[in-house]
Each structure stands twice: as structure tokens, then as C-alpha cells.
Amino acid sequence: GDSVTQMEGPVTLSEEAFLTINCTYTATGYPSLFWYVQYPGEGLQLLLKATKADDKGSNKGFEATYRKETTSFHLEKGSVQVSDSAVYFCALRYGGATNKLIFGTGTLLAVQP
Amino acid sequence: NAGVTQTPKFRILKIGQSMTLQCTQDMNHNYMYWYRQDPGMGLKLIYYSVGAGITDKGEVPNGYNVSRSTTEDFPLRLELAAPSQTSVYFCASSYYSAGEELFFGSGTQLSVL
Image (cartoon, rainbow over all chains, first blue to last red; front, side, top):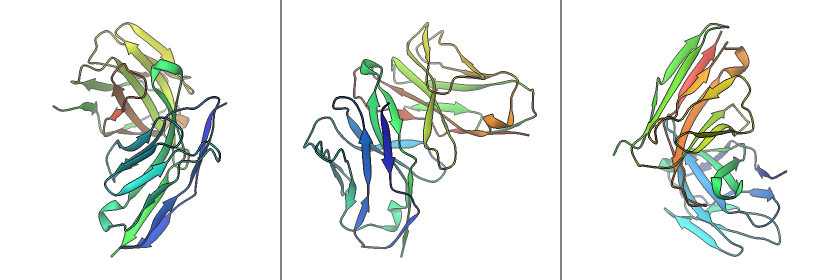
């Protein structure tokens, strides 16, 4: 069945460092791909999405490119801030029109000043 | 707009007790979902609904029941609570179109002792 694998955390970075969080997927066809972010004590929020191969999603300085050939959707940011500390979830949409999502296990990012 | 509202935020149950987790949204979304989040396991879909009067099982429905009598409300019922149901529960909603963003509530932390 469909699945999402993302890198284990926690990831600890200093402020202004470069961030990469790896995400790969297994799916039939070409699902839409998402990154959601969960700040402490809150629910998940959509960070960015891509709906077809070679699409690049971007938001708040974060980017991810839908790579069909490597079945990947890695999250990157050039310069992280303390306020980026959160748990990041990669997800894919399955189930046709019902908008159901499969989530990865989440990666905790801790940014130190 | 309040978005997606979940109550209660925290609850401790004894084994065998029952309770209902409440979820309401004011965005007139057709689709609603219940997920549970276990440490290191990501989010798993419990039940979902594509409109009032229509519900269906997700990946992990055992031990839970739902109803959807109105567009706004999607309560989750736990019957005969078990320690395995200790988790954080998130309700989410989205518009009917495939690929639309899911909006999450802030979660209910449930412990069954």
C-alpha cells in the first residue's frame, strides 16, 4: 500500500543554518504531496504542497520539489530561525476524492540561537 | 472564524469507561476526519465523513464510533476505553475538492489508566 518515510529526528541546528528533511514515498500513480508543521501544543498546519511531478511548493522560506524519478519530496530552508522549531510531517493524499492523507512519522526540528 | 474546535483538551479515563470527543467546524466544510497521533508513529486515520449522514472507517477504527448529523459536528465516541487508546486525537476538516488543505483542531490528549 501507499506509504511515506521521512528521516528520523530530532534535528538540531543553529540559527541561520541550512535545513533538509528527507521524505520519500511509495504510491500507485502520482499522489499530491504535502508538508505539514506542528508547533508545540497546536494542531497541524499546511506548510506547502505539490500536486504533480516537478512542481515546487514554497512558503515562509521553505521549499520542496516533487521528484517522480526518486519518489521524493525533501523539505529545505536556506536559513532557519528559532521560530521554525516544530515537528514537520510529510504526507501524501490517497483515496481519490475523499482527501485522506497518509502521514510520515514526523521530524522534530530544534533550532538553537 | 474559530476554525476547528475540539473539546476537551485533556482527559483521563479509567479502563472500561466511555466518553465522547467533540469536534465542530464553522467553515462549512463537507469533509471531516479523526486522526490519532502516537509518539513516533505519525498520524493514523480513525474515521472520516464526506458529508452529513455519511461516515466511513479509516486505518484504525476498532474501539471507536462516529456520527455526522450536521455539517458542523463530528463527535468521536470511545466505548469501553482501553490503555491502547491513550493518544492525542486530532479532528480535521476540508473542502470537498480533492487536494484541498486539511484544517486541524488543537487536539485532545487522552490517557486511559
